[in-house]
Image 1 (cartoon, one colour):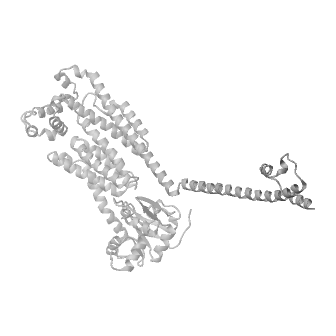
Image 2 (image 1 turned 120 degrees about the vertical axis):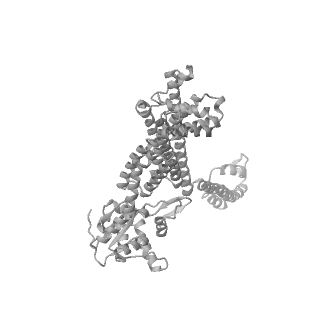
Image 3 (image 1 turned 180 degrees about the horizontal axis):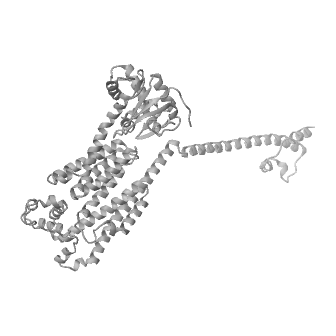
Length: 549
């Protein structure tokens, strides 16, 4: 019975892999030695107990092996989490990648522009040498190659080099009695000889007498300016198109049509060969200055470059003011259609005026500059800007608005409105009254990133009938970000956040003062334009909203 019970106790135990080996070592039945029944009974009982112990040990061993696996898995997950980049790092890397791409594009574009200019200068030098066999000729024969009367300019260049000193040479040219019979003239003023003066001075100062002949130094200066001409043309096309491939196409077009665009092949000393490269640089700087997507530092650089090149262009060439007149007329047309910011047009006019004034002084009070069409255009533009506020006030004084009409606008402008028309206004230029300050902040919301409905509710809360939008505030640009009225409004309204020089917008609406000028719904549903010029836009706040699409 004991044997039966022991065997029954053994039967429920299921064997697992590896138990057979253990039992073969511990259980004597597995050996070939004979055993007695008593030994069998004892062995069976001991086998049951040993089997159970081996099972427990196996389970503990498996659990012990499982825990390190789980710990390793957890460690791998932690390492994977650590390796996963955060959104902030991803955005930083993407911004760095974009910045790197821009720098690479800028580098190769500038390299292509400079390369085109240098290759063009080498081409001109080689072409000039092969056309005239310049190096194998005598000095007199070389000078004869300056055709079209251009040799006269080179004569004064030689005169400056043979003078005892630079100052003495300038004095003799300003009181020249050897050129025109019976007359003493100022050839510097008559012929615009500043290129020859500067070139002769550089030849003296740099000590080039022992390195290069005067004629090669002279034509080298002209060919160098032609290289600058082509480089500036490349940059202008690049800025306007956004790709430097367009710059290469523009340079190719210029080189192909060179006989129709320049006389540098046979009349090197002519004034236009000295002046047009500066004009090309002025156009490139003007193009960059008129761009809307440039920062303040780039804008200032373009403005300074435009000022310097405009002045040099006027000083070097007597016909330059006619070219600038055409340019100024084109800018006037762009300004008339509100395609250019009025502030930038005013800055360009300042460049014109200062350049003409300085050239007038350095050209010994040249009367031709005072009668130039450019100066007439500038005087007309200044008068037009002066009469723009006058026309606005004149409209307000003769408008058929009811006596109880209320006008909204900037406090400074409303003071003038009150003075000239007597209408009721929403605010005054007083900064000690908290209620007027809050009213001014509300009316200035027309320059914020607000919807037409929001502005309509704000203005009607002040019982406004007419609102005046000023271009100087709507398109205000400043070298310091965050200090303009529209910047302060955006920050106060929580629509814009500045972080490390970057601006992030959180408004789904465009700037109201920009959007309302486009005359589309829903702005036309709430407001009706009754007057506008380049400086002011006056809108009537509709008492009855008409939903037109």
